[in-house]
Image (cartoon, rainbow, N blue to C red; front, side):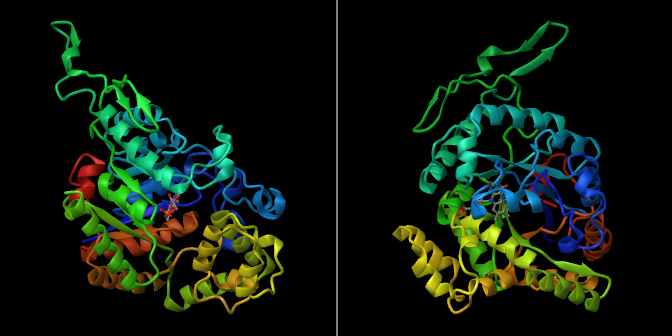
Length: 443
Ligand SMILES: Cc1cc2nc3c(=O)[nH]c(=O)nc-3n(C[C@H](O)[C@H](O)[C@H](O)COP(=O)(O)O)c2cc1C
């Protein structure tokens, strides 16, 4: 058995809304994305379909660096606007009973006390179904929203993240088991001898403690980690319960999982309690032909000016290099030479374009995959077969599906694909445990 999770990749933000790029079933997303209904429908459908969790992305900036303005960002609705995911969580929990709900929090900007208190509160409100996707953030603009002049360098952000998790864990353990007595007859609520300040003083954070709310059903909060660099993998191996793996081939998938198992063992942890979730964007339809046609239509859109602009925007967003300023017919090798950047940036640019040096910038923008489909294209049965085969080969643990969030796509996955996988016993049909962590650890 393996696991499915859904990546709400636009966060609690504007979802697939434009039929030109997202197809004919975008519903009222353009108008209603800031309301809860779509996400309630999504989460209750995922629970019916046996998903382990919903992961809600988050960032906090309006990009105005692509071609020097926010014109493309706001015209197209790229990663903005976006609301805060945390208030959405209780609304989703109210309409579901079992599925894990995993919003994103950044360890670079959230003070750990604030995060620990929020998450303990949500652990109660969800009856033990909250998790947290911890990210270190990569946006200078976001850093400026939180009062930094510059984003701390990546190695510092990861060191901060390690310390941040440590503070949060200590806060969640600052009330010992048995500290809450709640004895109405004796009039005793809590035993102060079991509630302790943590007096944490680290390189980046200081926190006195104890937490001023009581531990929730899970006590500590299950963590998901998304960064795939060695520092990201180490953070996951030390503290997380699951991680997101971005792989291109089956060999990558195998190697990733093996690497994580070695790291977990290095931290004295049992790999069996950890989940590697492979990010993918399947294309599912009633028939194989229809799925291929849909894939082809998407690829054709990617070759249009709007499709090229979208990918250039995205490439700028992840690299900080404004590809919108360069001649689209420049070959990549010449482009790298033109970009007047420091050594580190040039080397990461070279990595970004490996194997594409002979293409023009336009060709790269037309063909680059945002997230891999991992070959998962076809009818519900075809995709189910391919998922089973991939997991058999890789050894586990599951897929994080990233698809446009429309009710049509939700139905294709939750009422088309998942029931087949459930009937085969490939994914869960029930949730035997009360908490997200316990369900994530065993079926
Ligand atoms: C599937 C996925 C989801 C992510 N979600 C977020 C997010 O919600 N917010 C964010 O700031 N970064 C997010 N990231 C970025 C990572 O946290 C990380 O900053 C990035 O992958 C670079 O770090 P790395 O070099 O360690 O991979 C996500 C990455 C992946 C692959």
